[in-house]
Amino acid sequence: MTVSRRSFLASSAGIAIALATPLGRVLAQPRFKSDPFTLGVASGYPQSDGMVLWTRLAPDPLGSGDIPARPVDVSWEIANDETFGRLVQRGNAVASPRWGHSVHVEVRGLDPARWYWYRFRAGNTTSPRGRTRTAPAAGAAAERMRFAFASCQQYEQGYYAAYRHMAAEDLDLVCHLGDYIYESSWGRDHVRKHEAGEPYTLDEYRNRYARYKGDPDLQAAHAAFPWLVTWDDHEVQNDYAGARSQNLDPPQLFLKRRAAAYQAYYEHMPLPQWARPRGPDMQLYTRWSFGALARFHVLDDRQYRSPQVCPRPGRGGSNVVEYCGERRDARRTLLGPEQEQWLFEGLAQSGARWNVIAQQTLMAQVDRKPGEGQSFWTDGWDGYPLSRKRLLTHIAEQRVANPIVIGGDVHMSVVADLKTDFDDAQAPVVATEIVGTSISSQGQPLKLVESWKDDNPHVKYANPTRRGYTVLELSVRRALAHLRTLDDVKEPQSRIRTLVHYAVEDGRPGAQRA
Image (cartoon, rainbow, N blue to C red):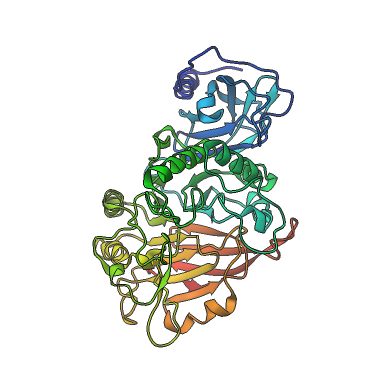
């Protein structure tokens, strides 16, 4: 193989980044008795000249055997073709026990807007191959982008057939919006089980991720496309808010648990080095662009939020409240002051045709009390109405181009108009919201959701009965959403179909049935 000077320099840059972890001791090069790549491969955070490549060595994924308790040398290759006949880069990385023998290789020096294939080697074993792509160059006039977003994949409540279908889609990217794992066992009609009870320690969280990532359909979706990721609550504990746990544990004790959960999250996601956690702190929010066509503003609505107001007696976390004056305290924030200001600046400065705000939950107001009076769920944006109003007012005043909010969390498909005043039927629409249903987590009863319809006319569509994911196709003229849902999440070979299509025209906020 002839290697150009450009390719050599690019390869050297990739190696330097991959070897940023101190070696500490002599690298082990074991001969594995069983496959160390049981958790698959993944890529993420594509730039115009590279991306992050990920794997984690885990020959005994639910235990600790068969791997040295010292750094292991892992080689990687990236090629122009799936047979690896035309290698463009190769290098070596360190799988350190400090980070669960995970590998995060930051490749640079590739060509923009093209597909690549990659794989890893450790000892005597080669990983499955993955496929990934670079983003278009900054400002490039990309005409089309197609991505899927997903959330809420409670392992026990259904199979991951949705991911098998997602892996066969024509996509440029996958965006995961939280609840990648569930810390607790709940729900009805389980089809499979967690490996143990609720995790608290790093090893326990590692095992929970190993249980989920061992699923072949989830692995297929990771291997097919680059991903962007953010978390919600179940990656740590249900309904946690900053340093406050649902159970009102002492903050120093809960932050120790949060540190373990955050590290396990980093170890199992294709995240860049800048996201590496520092104890219980980890920056996850970021911006990502697809040429001049789209800019993604990826948010973290857990780590910096004000605690939920008016909780149930003796508890933290969410509640459905009818009367709670604290809810409208202007000092309350879902994103934290620093992230909120960062988001405002990014939206105001964006020159992209479409601005996708990738966040965890439902942003539109939902009055949950039919008829007279109002009641609201406090864990989502309805628990932080003035924080939401600041954001939507900023979008309106800055005339942000084509804002689309995507979310998950509520286990149902929702299409809604976003306004600065949801109680005023004449208030202008300033943004469009599309919330995807869950991959597997069960939804609320249809009758209950339908009872909210008359009191929430800005919600154009809501269906909690089906599991799946959403595909959003962006072009210079419009955004087209395909709500893709399974026939039966309890059936591992379930078929999938498009439940409904919605379109957003360029320059006209608000989705219309397509």
